[in-house]
Length: 335
Image (tube, rainbow, N blue to C red; front, side, top):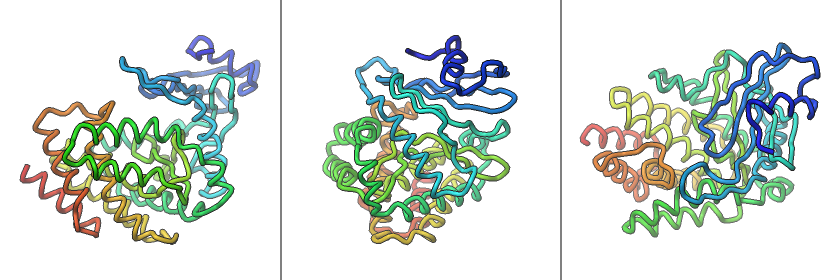
C-alpha cells in the first residue's frame, strides 16, 4: 500500500496511532518526495510524522533503494533516546515492516528548520555548537559497543544513498583524483567503531526555543565518525560558496561545529578521525555539484571552483579547521 493524503488518516486509525474520534486538524506533505513520502499529521492531542520509504529514487534513471532502511532508522531512534538529552529527537511510535512505514512524533509546531533560517542569512553559531556536541556524544557513547556493531552492521542504505551516488560518481567524473576518492570510500566501508548518523546537516535539524531537534536517521550504521563531520561541513561550505556576502559566517559555522565536537570527543583515534574528515569533506563538497543527484546544478565556472576547493581538501597538509576554512575563504575571494 502506498500512502497518500486520502489514505493516511484511515491508516493511522487502523494502526491505532490516532483515536477513532480524534480529529486531524492539519495534514501536510513535507520534503521533496524523492526517497520517501513524508507527512505531518496534527490533532489537538499530538503531532505525528509519517514516513514511507520508496524503493526507487524518484528520478528518470534507475536508482533502487532498500526499503528496510526504516528499521535502521527506528533502531537508531531507540538507541539515541538512551544517549541524548530529552526532546532532542523524535520518539518512534510505529514501525510497519510490511508497508515500510515509520511513524514518529513530529517537531513542535513552532520549531523552525535550520535550513530555512540559514537560507535567510541567519547563522546561529550556538546551534552549530549544539550539533557538534551531540555528534560527539553519539560517537563517544557508542564507540566499540559490540551490541550496536551487530545491530547496525548492514551498510546497504549507506552505500546506496552515500557511497554509490556521491563517492563513486565523483571518482568516475574526475580521473585525476579518482584514486584519492576511491580510497576514502573504501575507508568508510571498513569495519566501523561508532554509530554514524550519516545525514547530519541543516535540513535535518529543527530549532525549537534555541534547542536543536534532530530528524532522519535512515542511513545510520556502525561506521567511521569522520563521515558525520564531513557531511555537515560540506553542506555548510556549499552555502558559503552560494552566499558570497555571508561566506565568512557560514564558514565560521563549520569551525564552531568542528571545535565543539573535538572539545568533547574522547574516543580512541579522534585525532586520526579529524584528518580523515577533512578528506571526506573534499569528496562530499564536490559531490554536491557533481554527484548522481546534485544538490546544486552548477555552471562550469562554479563546478571548477568547487573542484579546486575539494582537491585542496583532499591533499591539504593543514590540520586546524580554522586554517582550512580560512584557506577556503581566500579561495572564494580570489575566485
